[in-house]
Image 1 (cartoon, helix red, strand yellow):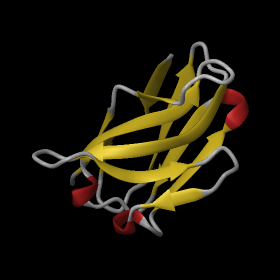
Image 2: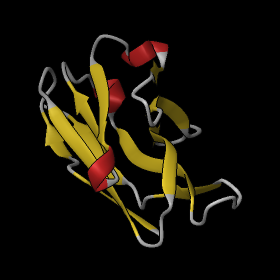
Image 3: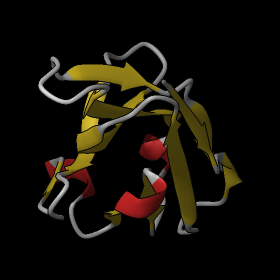
Image 4: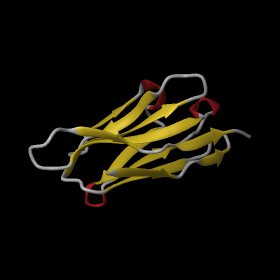
Length: 120
């Protein structure tokens, strides 16, 4: 199983960005998919996550500016970011809690990270 994230880049403050993450490989089903971020010198933190039925959770710091969605048919999760701030600068990682076989254990996989830099 692999998770491939993309969509990061250099954005001016106030700008928008959409990150994508595709899960591929031997996947039976995916429960939660989510996005974390790690800023320089800081611990990785949860940004948002979404369940298979579309229920979402957001970090307080991003509520109202970030939106998470997923396409279950494509095993893809998206993070739409609006009104970017300098403090949003970080490497963004996607993850997925999934099953590779029926009745198997739930496993967590991580993507490689995509860098978002907010600067003028």
